[in-house]
Amino acid sequence: MTIHSAGSLAAFLKDRRTRLDPASFGFSGRRRTPGLRREEVAQRANISPTWYTWLEQGRGGAPSADVLNRIAKGLLLTEAEREHLFMLGLGRPPEVRYIGADGVSPRLQRLLDTLDASPALIKTATWDVVAWNRAAEVVLTDYGALPAGQRNILRFMFRSPTTRAKQHDWENLARFVVGAFRADAARAGAVSEVTQLVDELCSVSPEFAALWGENDVLSHGDGTKRLKHPELGDIELEYSAFAVDGRPDLSMIVYNPLDDKVAGRIRDLARRPKPQKPDDHPAP
Image 1: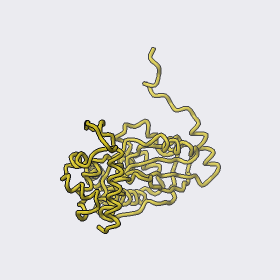
Image 2: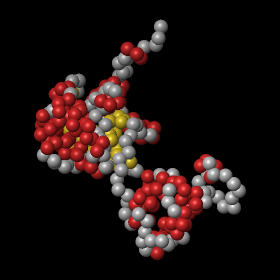
Image 3: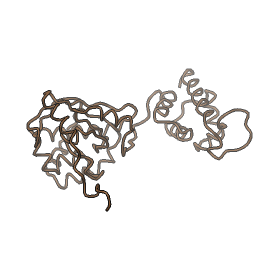
Image 4: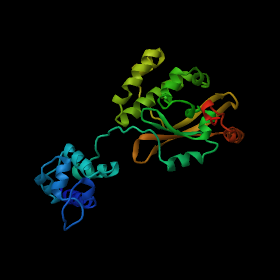
């Protein structure tokens, strides 16, 4: 660690330490300066108070990744702050660790909802769909009608006859999906998290098992998707995939219709009232 980075790390640690409220951590007593004391941070991080003091003084050598992770936890750093801590301390970002998601922020959902003619969804690195818009419901799948555990794109591809029947070239699409899924899971550090899903699909789909065994790795950037839709007929959509800033486990996919008439018909379908489920009716 250079003198410059050691000084920057020291300043960053001190700044974050002084922002914390001692009372919220159960620390009491009169204080001449704001925030936690150095020994309190060391206690929370389970490291030597002397070692932590040296880091805040810009000396003591480069800390290990384990020490930085302990300090990040002790200081309640966000993922962005943790990454910055590693860049200052070791000159590299931390190893990827997968953080699953059950949903998205209201702001991100509102963004999806503005795309009234473009089916759009947000998926995790394990390809679970966690957010979508109304256009996606009427063109792709009514995700909201399914239990959360069943909103997985690979399960649709290899376990749903309806999904398979809507594809113009299922074989090539399936090959692409498996290769892109493998790349996404590895990139997000979610290899162990997908083991159960992979084992399940290998046991029920010989086609998936064969494709998984080929070990292809593909990029899911942009392209064209053709669908056989029961109401729209044969339609063609351009798609683009976008990373969600600060969330390596999430990506957004937007499908744009190539034909203005198709776009208008998607809007019309999306404006129709949703069919009521039996439990949607008010109690008598």
